[in-house]
Image 1: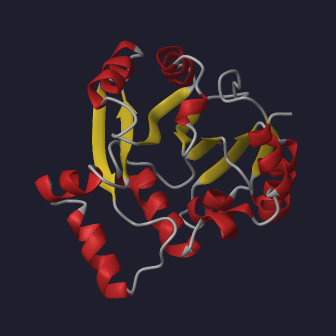
Image 2: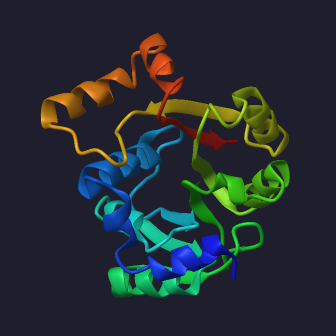
Length: 208
C-alpha cells in the first residue's frame, strides 16, 4: 500500500467532515452544478461517482432526487460510504480507470481525482461508453492546460462542453454575504478567471 493509500485508509471514517470546512454548503453547491451544468439531469437519473471517498457527495445528490453509485479504490472508504448511505445508494470497490457499471448511467463524476487517470484521453473514452448524459469533473487550471483537456474530451465523443468556475472554498467557511458574493462571482467571466489564477477550480460538464 502506498503512503497515499494508507492515508486514505486511516482517514476513511469521517473523511468528508475532515475535508470541508462547511460540508453542507460546499457539497450542496457541487450537487447543484452536477444537476444543472450542461445537460440537465432529471429526477431518478443515476450519478456514478468515481473516487467517491466516503460518499459524502451522495447525500447531496440523493436529496435532489437523483440516484447515486459510489466507486472507490480504497476498501476502507467504500465501507465508510456504505455506513453513511445505508440502503439509499450503492458503494463498490473499483479503480476509476477500469470500472464499468452493470448498466449505463446518466452522469459520471470525478472530483479531486482526475489525476488518477493513467491516460486522460483513454479515461474519457472509457467513461463515454457508459455515460448517457454527461461527465462532470473538477479541473485545476494551474495544473492542466484547458485546451488539452477539451481536445481529449472532443476526441472521446464528448464535444458539448460547459465550464463554470467553482469559487466556494473547501477549507474556509464563509459568512452568508461572502458566500453569495462568491457564487455570484462564478458568473462574472473575467473576474472569476482572475481568481482562478491563484486558487479554486473549474467544473467541467461534457456531453454528446
